[in-house]
Length: 78
Image (cartoon, rainbow, N blue to C red; front, side, top):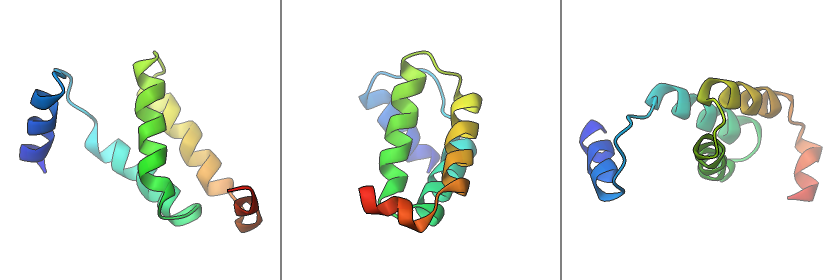
């Protein structure tokens, strides 16, 4: 995994290292509490928010809280 992350960082000219465990945790919450396809989209949106200046820890906490509170009937709008 570290080798892959480093290769992507080089390819995209990114110097910062991601908090892998935090990102995987939020992806897991989205996959388990919403739907599996929600995981990659959620992590993309997380990255987008962080790129715009959001704090990573705060943003993941908000997403995790949202995912944990998600009800199956909420999927009717997807």
